[in-house]
Every structure is written in structure tokens, then in C-alpha cells.
Image (cartoon, rainbow, N blue to C red):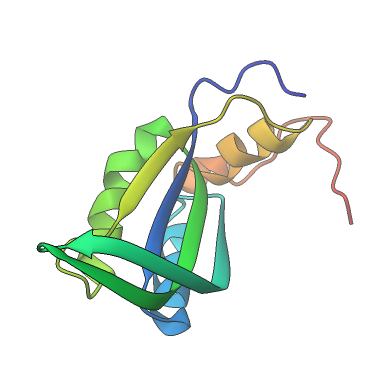
Length: 124
């Protein structure tokens, strides 16, 4: 397990459909705001909104990023999400597998971040 993950975050948001999740995922990975985005279809959400209990089928989108990019991720999500108030949550990582922390850092942050750290081994 990687020892230093203080700057790494998982950002999640529920989306009304796979098309919305896919569009946001592609955008944030392309802009290097997230190293990876996972789309989990088939989420059943039960929640209280505007004083009433609602129940919807949704898609969960999770993104791996660094704390430096959380605010930019929020902006990108809100600008491309159809909900008035997207349910965006941020979780700090307690740990990560060997190489994952380095990979997230290498794949986020702009053009200069395209080179993986020396010694990084792909699982392919």
C-alpha cells in the first residue's frame, strides 16, 4: 500500500443516465482533472428532496483525482449536469495500491503530467 495519499481524492456524483455520466467522465479525463472515471449503472437512489421522499434509477460516476483539482471538477460537473443540485461528494483516500497514487498524480494536472514516474509498471 502506498504511504502518501494525503492529496488524493475520490469524487462521486449520481447522474440521471449513462449518457450524462459518460459525457462528464470523458470531459474530466480529457482535461486531466481526473486520472480515471468509473461509471456504475443500475444504482437505485432513495432520498429526501424538497420535503418529499423520491426514488430513482441513477448511474454513479466516481473519479480519481488530486485535491488541487476538486474545485475544477465541481465546476465541470455542475456545468454539464442536468440536475439543479448534483449530489457531489468528495472522499479522501486512506490508502492506495502500489503505483496507484503515482499514476493518479501523473495523469492529472495538464500537459506536463503525461509522463509516468520512473519505475512505474503497467499491469497490461
